[in-house]
Image (cartoon, rainbow, N blue to C red; front, side, top):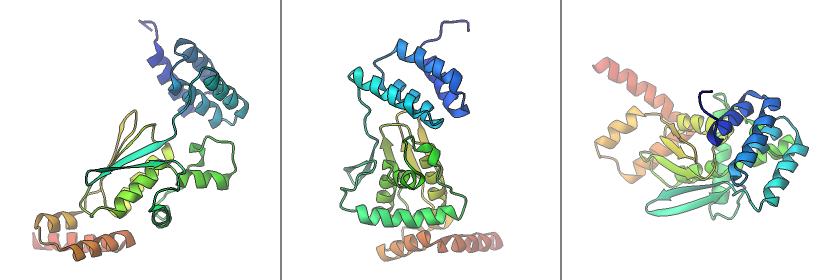
Length: 247
């Protein structure tokens, strides 16, 4: 390289090693990164995730112990969503929210629907030494999934779902959210600590109706119900075909 690599370059390389499964190079990079910036929690997380992805749990425990020895700790995954001027916080695996039961039921429905269009839970995103059943349970409890469902339950069909997460969005949540956006026909935006994840699915019928500003609340609720059930997809096709014939 024309210049000496700094921590940002080593961190990017470590992330690439994680994605491509190069554990040998990744271990060398992780050691260099922790030597350069031993006070950065995210470097320990990257190193831990690298080892966890290849089942090297002894190395995972070693990195986590090193984190504690240096007086550092990993923040739990949290997601925030702002609805009508009030901010709601969700933590991974937290069951304290008053709407917890409704959120779980709604996610079960959504998970079934997105499974019909290709969703397969990515249990490799669970970097804990647990069995497959527990991994599925942990995936369903991720904070952004809870926040997204909460937003769907408490907003009208025209409202974009926006939330912020304090750590990186995992691969499973990214894929699931993309398909949820498609199934429910809602625009969803997630800002994690590294990037924006923008999921967009325009619904021509709803746009036309909402622009006309002629909907009453009962009809909006009916449209949302149709949307979740999948019936609206048929209506959209019919509407689009009708528009083609009239233009």
